[in-house]
Image (cartoon, rainbow, N blue to C red; front, side, top):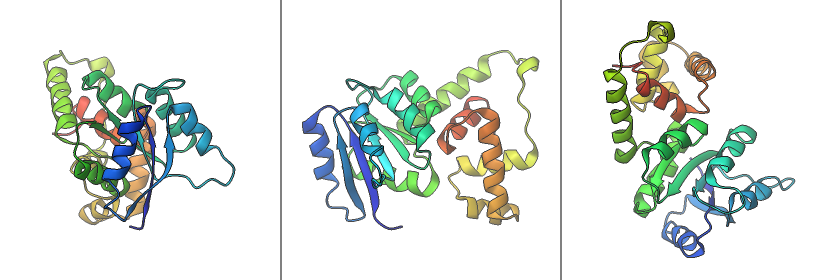
Length: 219
């Protein structure tokens, strides 16, 4: 993996500068865009021949265009860009919604620089980053889902092969590693993953993982 180009959108200048400074010791991370709000970030992405970031660190509450609306736009117009929500909001509703609209990870602003770096590396390698905070929310949602009475009308069915692919994705295996385990090509794995994302309305791999856990598609 070469140098990872990163953008940050946050209306608090001191925090924004602090994040950039704290990640400076890591030579494989380079900040190329610094924005005060979502609209400013979008404007920067739309500059003709602009170098696009690989990862965006996205605040939630910002003037002009907030992190939710900006994430929706970026996920649709620039699906190759990975988005990590970096916010002070611990509300589980924000976590679920951000992942569903296209975020690849969710971090609190209390996170250490080492974790921010790890999140950047993991979304580049696997397509998502789930820390203990997010995993607790996933488990809680799964537990609450199991309490509800089964609804045969809306029962979700998937094939054994699709279930295996989702299971290994949730176990953080890459497409190549999954292909080796299932004795198929990596292209087949990617095709199954893309088909499942389209079927379930997931914006990215993180959204697929959220959907799978929330709907008990894996053991």
